[in-house]
Length: 436
Ligand code: PA5
Image (cartoon, rainbow, N blue to C red; front, top):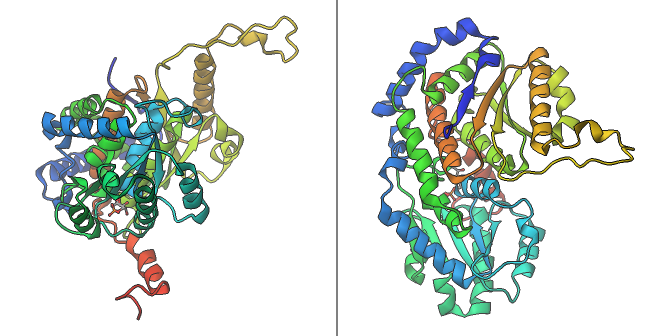
């Protein structure tokens, strides 16, 4: 089956009554979302983004990506939060685990990231890596005024202009920002950089299917059309309220769990390629739901790695958690545990088995243990790690996030809390206008 599958039996069993009772609320939240009558309804552009993405935009993005692929050995994506995590999540899920350790090949630039921290060593070491190299920059900021990417861009642009010359640098910089406002828009217009617009009605954490995510994903060599197709299919699947609507089911269930005291949701993966997908998911749910003194705390673990660090807590700690497991049905390759005549490690009992079979047994064994230990378990099966499946998964979570936020009674589309640290930092740095 090509669609992602939701298995909720090991979670519903904990909150059967609450789950059923919440159905009318879930139906209402979905219709408020679809009809655009709820809080934050000026940020619903992502809802029909997949079905509304036209071929011309895809072609233009692919052409820009091709230009960067031909002229660069490294392309640095500069952005933070919603202007970074989606591309990082998809590119990490689709690339070879060791891609970063191979030298760049012609027309296959390495995609690097900056502006997602203020690490002096990070930025210095990035500059060092790029010394004398052919590189390009995709600078992404919806507001166009965010400090972290602005610092990184200033450094990288200076370096690029010195290395390639000011004119050549212009064709190697692409800016993705607001259509009319912000410092980045002004700079891009003045300098003549190629630009893409982030639609006004799409917030940062919902923007991976706009040029914000699509361009860096295309530069990494992935098929953005398939990504959009997967999302568009999920858009259709989640349009109406029904027992078959996976986003509604997930939103309804996590709210039932939350109201019965399960305040922390742990997104679990059994494939290291999904590590950054969890980071994207944490931002999506954390910024959307954590407000007004409410919200499930979104956490994540990479299994089996973290079974050897967090496994004890999950099995035996305070019973305020539930797990949502991302399970990839089919790896793209096949490898088996080798036979060994001496069998000194005692591993011959699994000789000949696929590594993935061992992983799946670890997953099943963990599910049994955690469910037994009082941890409700939602399982999401992904057919394979490819563009189409990731497109589905992204839209599934986005849609569920909107429904879930409304069920929780918050505006899922604002992020007032993000401003508090910025105001303090600006005062401390004596930014004009913030000195009092
Ligand atoms: O989801 C959000 O709105 C935020 O995480 C933003 O994406 C992040 O703060 C970066 O903002 P900007 O794109 O304006 O630089």
